[in-house]
Amino acid sequence: MPDEIHKVFFSYSRSDADFVLKVAKALRKEGRHIWVDQLDIPKGGRWDEEVEKALKASRCLLVALSPASSQSQNVLDEVSYALDEKKVVIPILLQSGNIPFRLKRLQYIDFTGDFDDAYQQLIATLNALSSPLAVPRADQPVQPSLDSPPKAAISVKHDKPESGKPVDANTPIERGISAQRHFPMKIIPAVIVVCVVAIGYALFANMKSRQEEAEASIRTHSQAAVDSLTTLMETNKQVMATGSATGLETHKQVMAALITDSQVNDFVGRYLAAQNSANATQLLPFYADRVDYYNQKSADKDFILKDRQNFYRRWTEVDNRLVSTIDVQQPQGDGTVQVSYTMQYRVTNPARADSKSGVAREELQLRLTNGDLTIVAQREKVLSTEK
Image (cartoon, one colour):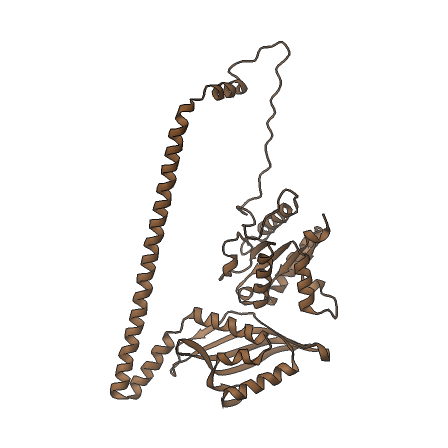
């Protein structure tokens, strides 16, 4: 079997690089063929081409799960490619947090506790992968359970009787033959009927339980939506009836309170992906008509479009990755929420053989407009830079 089929591709977020390199180097010492971008991309090589080449040549993808990697578009793209190509995907949990949807049904190896124990589980999993008898698919769990390594098969040997010596009818072998010979075959139909009835009842009970859970969830969410809508309608009545500043401020606060953390997380993930597309027109829907845009007060979308186009002409490739949790301060008095997060950035221009990278803290002010979040203010502070 060619060596390439045993290659393991390590997918991770930059913020988890120290841990990933520790595991990768330990596996390499044991003779594992582990591919990591920081160790295996040659000087002058194009990152995207080398990653694609390594993914295609790998049989297995090892993905490090953390809040940062769950928000990384590059990591999600690599996982999707591996799953679509039916490669084996082994998730390892570094930090508790949201697990990407496509990985929820896969068993993961938990590195949040004892490192040595988790590392031995990883070794056992890779050993099983190398076995010619074990060829798991990417749409199946890595192992039924990773709590303990698989037990070895037990071989039972029966000694032959001495020549000329009769075999005792009470020995285990004779008892087994006797029991098989005299098994009452008439009870088999009754056993089958009982099994069918038991399975049918279990399925019915499970379906009924799921239906009751769904109905309870719908009632809860429906009532929450009704309560929010009622509060909003009452506020609108107050504003229209009195036109008072107090009523207007209350209205803004209610609108800000309707913004959930999950909405913010989804918005930031899509916004970073749009930034990485290096396409200025894809960014415009994320902005309000007027934005306090860095040092430009009340910039319109034409101004933002031209600024982004100039940026992408200078830097044709952009890679922004979330490396922190997303902080949300809500609500603000003006009907907005304040969102901040740290990202690791890398911009390159291969034509000019130029690149820059570093860490920056981005601050966004978001407002809910017609059911969609939009940016009404944006600031950024560079924390570190390197070439």
